[in-house]
Amino acid sequence: MRILVTGGAGFIGSHYVRSVLDNQYAGCEGAEVTVLDKLTYAGSTSNLPMGHPRLTFVRGDICDRAMLMDLLPGHDAVVHFAAESHVDRSITDPDVFVRTNVLGTQTLADCCLHRGIERVVHVSTDEVYGSIEQGEWTEDAPLCPSSPYSASKAGSDLIMLAYHHTHGLPVCITRCSNNYGPHQFPEKLIPLFVTNLLSSRDVPLYGDGTVVRQWVHVDDHCRGIDLVLGKGRPGEVYHLGNGVELTNRDLTERLLRLCGAGPERVRRVADRKGHDRRYSLNVGKAERELGYESSISFDQGLADTVRWYRENRAWWEPLRPDLG
Image 1 (cartoon, rainbow, N blue to C red):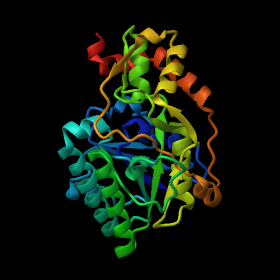
Image 2: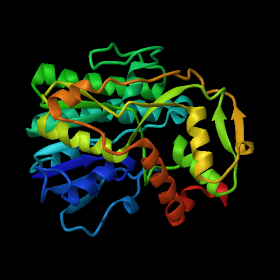
Image 3: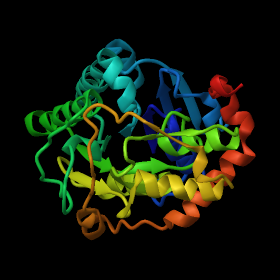
Image 4: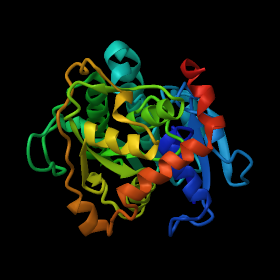
């Protein structure tokens, strides 16, 4: 089996690649992996086992149709992680989000169609639904994105589904809750707060800290993606997560304890524009159809993540010149 992984040098994509190369997924043992990554600020070959005999790395842009048409032949499946993903950046610089997430996904979908790719998994986010006050979203909930980032991801989802319904492209879509774990670029909440605290800096908590998010370890997320790749029904959407809900204030308190810091290290900052108050995914469909379940408890996963950043300063310190 040969798999093309777009965005495979980023946080989630690189974890998936390392897991495939370590033969952690039944049915993918011995698979060859091609990573396609533009290597923007959040992607790095340091996240990949570059010398692995079953890994091929290609630096390129998913908007480059000619490159994709040359690269795709010989691959059995595509797992599409490549995306601009930081909400704050999308508010100040939305153009690149629309180009990469919408046009890039359309270009990839069209090239996969013309090259006859047998399986495509498009990795998306719970943010496409907007905010939910009570209850949980199921996969048929209407999309109501609030930020340029989530709007661009919703657009990419609809493009992939349109290619399935119009042309029969064998694509599945996954939507996950907030990921955490090692190798996450330190602009996201958990690695930003941990690296600040390990550097004796304050942490910036938005508003009153009462927004609610679900959290899933990147390993549980990637195992779900593998299940969707192997068993998912084309044209279907699958939610992946573990149901752990925390306010940002609660999460901050846990990180303070794990880093040995006190509440005086919290600095309240103005809330994000258009900040969604709560996300919540129902993962019952993936459990019933695919046998999906999370295996890493949040307490253990968070402690392990903090330990990884504490022990791997050489990885993240070059990414945080502001702490120097």
